[in-house]
Image (cartoon, rainbow, N blue to C red; front, side, top):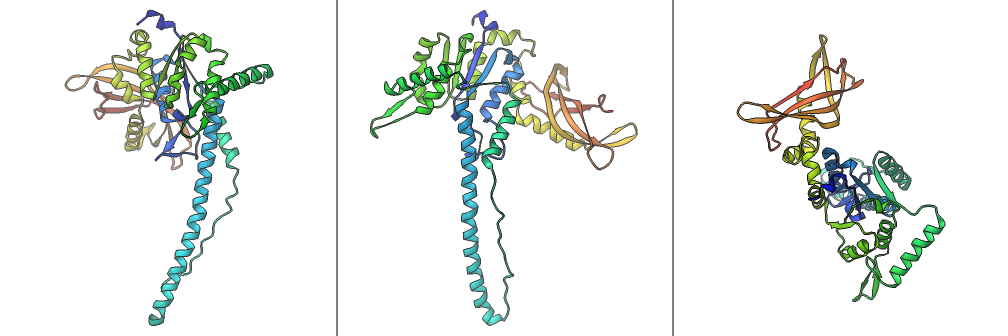
Length: 365
């Protein structure tokens, strides 16, 4: 590994198909956030200190596509409401029919009156999703590649798009058996990358996508830009590539010697560890401070690991992990105040918990 990598800059660019947030294979629309894979990469960069050397980027085309997918999924569910409303009414009518037949003998109706009324579903979903999107990106350090307001640059990019389409150059693709051409969106995403004004400042560019057509674009990038270029299929492959590329940086990094303690860090920055801390605080419930019983409740992680040291615990060496968490607390029944506390968790070298957990109360007034 070249020592030069200590000062190298890498740009990680995402295709839309690696940004979609889904639950049970359905697009999530009640909140706007990017995929678990994106968040895994972001978390990895944060915990290793590589955020200073790696920039993340997406196209505004992808953002618009993600917004529309959420809007579309909302409308699909809205249609399901109307469909099931009709089904419920049909079932109710059948229920009444059989209840009336039974009542001829029993002289009694068993089905109580039922009324199904739906509220007006008039809702500006498109605007709401765009607002959530803007709020999400305002808190992120992400380069958004877009067509700027420079008319001459827009015209130049349009000319390149037309040439690529006419010449049927990848990622534009021809489906011979169907006699059709597809991939205009892919071409836009690709050309935005090639024409990104800061692209020449990076030593290496990673493109995270599961679209195989981009394999045919690798030479196009290296011939046009000249930087190292690599396709990554998913977030795990992306992290492996970054870890190999920045190996010398990571083993010399002040960030707790990440390579040596990789298994522990993978647990610390996982959803499992967040839930573990939340459960531990919930099990404590109340603490004594200044003679008062104070109710506490987990609110959020501020930093999963501000410090990690070797410690002796029973038999063998363990790690003492210090985290920063925000809690809600009150002396009465209502939670009125928030504060930040340190937690201490003893872990083994695999990231196993269950040894010891404690709260440091110095910051609680």
